[in-house]
Length: 143
Ligand code: SF4
Ligand code: SF4
Image (spheres, rainbow, N blue to C red):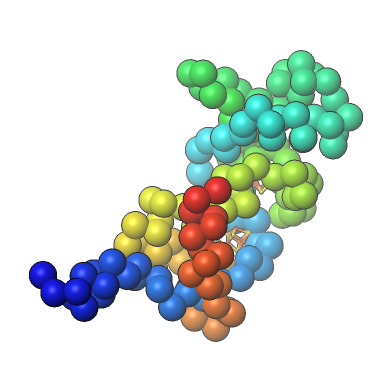
């Protein structure tokens, strides 16, 4: 294989960046059952923000799944995350990594087709939105 071909093949399909801007519509925070994973460090930060002990926070807002923890969703309210209020995240500054990095998740970034399909769930993925650079995308993927 010649060097030029190797370089082309090594390029990501999103090399030129991707058009995305979160509109804050809140759709990714409800609508279907799922898990909103939180790490120990994130649990610490959110409990602090809410002025709750870790135990209180666990009892009120988390479910244990195996050895991990997920923020509860409200099954009787369109599976809305418990922290979604009036379509806005009430812990926005402390929201978990999973929320911070959406839609730049490895499963979505795997292919252009997956990215395009995700646009039906996320109105932030639109050609008229500004571009997010490949550097920023990569840092979200790595975080
Ligand atoms: S669905 Fe997309 S645009 Fe709407 S809040 Fe989530 S990330 Fe932002
Ligand atoms: S923590 Fe905030 S951003 Fe994450 S799902 Fe809940 S409401 Fe949405």
